[in-house]
Amino acid sequence: DGGITQSPKYLFRKEGQNVTLSCEQNLNHDAMYWYRQDPGQGLRLIYYSQIVNDFQKGDIAEGYSVSREKKESFPLTVTSAQKNPTAFYLCASSIKATRAYSNQPQHFGDGTRLSIL
Amino acid sequence: AQKVTQAQTEISVVEKEDVTLDCVYETRDTTYYLFWYKQPPSGELVFLIRRNSFDEQNEISGRYSWNFQKSTSSFNFTITASQVVDSAVYFCALSEPSGGGADGLTFGKGTHLIIQP
Image (cartoon, rainbow over all chains, first blue to last red; front, side):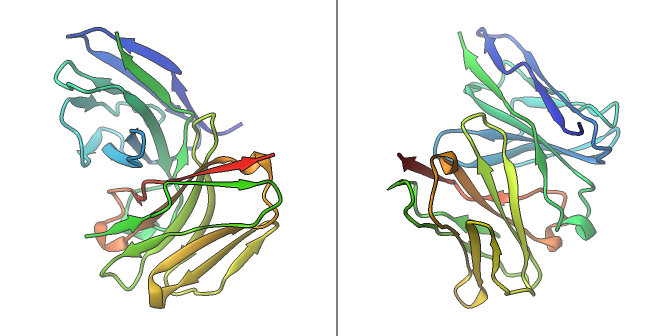
């Protein structure tokens, strides 16, 4: 079935450690997104990518990095610079991220829950 | 700037009751898109409905219905004869083409709906 796969489901980070969250999609979508969800805060955009080898910062990009070497993959690295990384991270994709496609819904993965040891 | 307000943080009702989730939005654009997503305990956001700003016709899908009123900038969601499986967090979201579409959606903070048996 087509969809978005995030792994791992649970992840623990030690102080000073970088960790990488995986996101893979087989929907043939051009655009991919990373969101952070905190209790009672809704979803906040970390990074998005409109096409391979391109990505843009969202509202809360500090302490995070991404890459988009393949259309299907958009991994997120939570660096040691992110002082409060404990949250639920959601990856999403959509057909395109251009103005003409702003009416298209995003499709989400099951999320990764990151905690600090 | 765009903003989505879901004033109800948590709603608890007994099964078979009707329940309405409120969503109020702010935008300067004349063309925009509104979405509702459901987030069950598993974590994945599930797309429920999209509404275009130029289409004010209300929509019904089974036990779900949506009331879009541009005059009050509201896009409310009603569940009729609620069931325990409806228990989830529900998000309202806004997308504006003027934003290039690339910034993704602006989400409300969500309403946690609890259906008691």
